[in-house]
Image 1 (tube, rainbow, N blue to C red):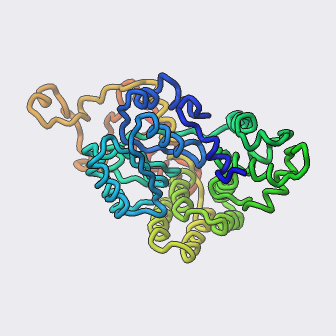
Image 2 (cartoon, rainbow, N blue to C red):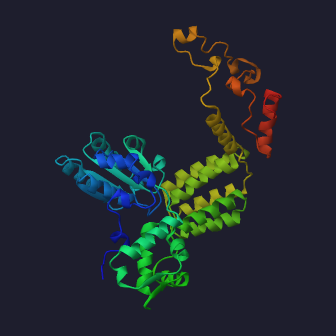
Length: 420
């Protein structure tokens, strides 16, 4: 029996074999052309687990025939980075692959900067987290970011059938794939996990022919693997229930789903980050203190870590769930962006333009602008929108005590202009 896991045996060796990332693997894509030409930039591959990040890194190294050094941010640090950089100075086109690069702290990421900038190494970082949050700006500016999509049912089933048709070990048995729902559900869209679960299931069925059903998969999975998966479907289902419970003002349900995530080993920063977003999206100006508490909680749990971070999270979650709710500011930016896409780049009114040079002043930039603080109540009515959008209302305060006060203030200031 081959000791190499099925997912590794089935790993694609070129971009044409990659399943589910056509925007990166098609012949007219930037990445495909870069790989074929050999001019591959440093990059960050961002996407869910098991969708091809490590595979793409291996393919690139193979295609450009470059020395390939893989590191994991879990087990490596500055020492290992410097060792690779030292070797790279005597080699051409070195590819350094760092899995889970978001786990590197700032000093570890900074150790890569000079080598990336000078082209000593070509960095390929893989992350499941938004690189805007987890990769420092200096390093991110030197890398191209490629987003990998989650795999759908059709693509995952294609993986299963390809493995059954092509893998030498599986072809030794009479395997009949009767049902796939359990395989797909437990793997949670992770292609690597899906193939390895298929192999575990096949090994666990002694009958001939080997008939794979949902019941068989569940029975074997419960014996052989942990069903809770913080990177798979449970991760997304539970965070969805968690957010919806807070939005629905049920602190009891919210703290229950919080406990489920904590017990399942969910990343404390992931939970806290979602609370910051929710505080603005679902509470907003109905209670501005919500965003302050959520932001403070995020910083606190980063410093404290588990197990004590659970107390801070519980305080924040119960407060947010119990707070008044409003999505008015969230809806306002959605409408504003849609308006920009629809109307294009309308000119800034002359009186609102900056006038740092004499020429600009001669062109009437800034002329007739009225400085609000020179007037009673720090307000003077003037036009701030492009003339084509005059009177267009984008922010409608929510129906709650705090935003009712905002509405009243806007009515007093603007009268009927915006219809408050």
